[in-house]
Amino acid sequence: MIRLFRSLLLILFLCLIAALPAVGSPIPLETETFTGCITYAEAGNPFGVNQGETFNWTATYPENIIGDVEISYWGNPNFALNITIGSYNFTADDDVHLAYGYPKFIFTDGELTGLDVWEDSFSIGSILYAFTTNTPLPTAGGFNPDFSTFSIFEYTDDGAKAVVSGNLFCSACPSAVPIPAPILLLGTGLVGLVGFRRKTH
Image (cartoon, rainbow, N blue to C red; front, side):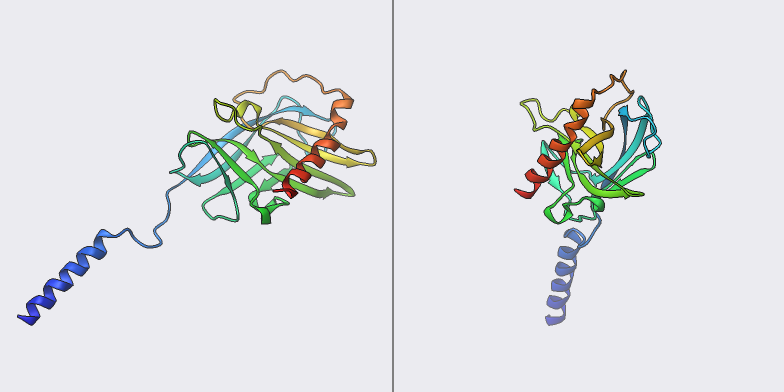
């Protein structure tokens, strides 16, 4: 009788174990390739890109993301980012504010529609550059990927100027309009504001 009771307990225990989700089972991930376009490129820029060109970049994230949400990276192995623009390459671990949760992945209805990244002071020869993206705050209609932009700035004695800029999401590059020099010099303020905003988070 005792043996039968023990056998029943063992069977019940094994059934309970089988019903539990496997501990440490991998989370289903999705790796998606996006197309970005270059709307401005300074002639002779060191990255070898031209105005009007497109480029591909990839992002990896869990499949089960729902709704409108901004997710911090924090070195999470379920997230990855690889952006290559000409000779320039950015991965999630390159973000200057990695310790503060950057880069950030922005989702609308579970779809990746924006990034918040910043790599500061990487050098080519003796010249320093910065890479940053800009995704405006969401409106009532959610995040708009049409306004998720990027810029590569060159630091100069006068501050900073954009040498390459464009959009992270597009199927074809629109006809680009040359950016006036005063607008390019606004890069100084933009880079400074990005740094200030991040330091206050």
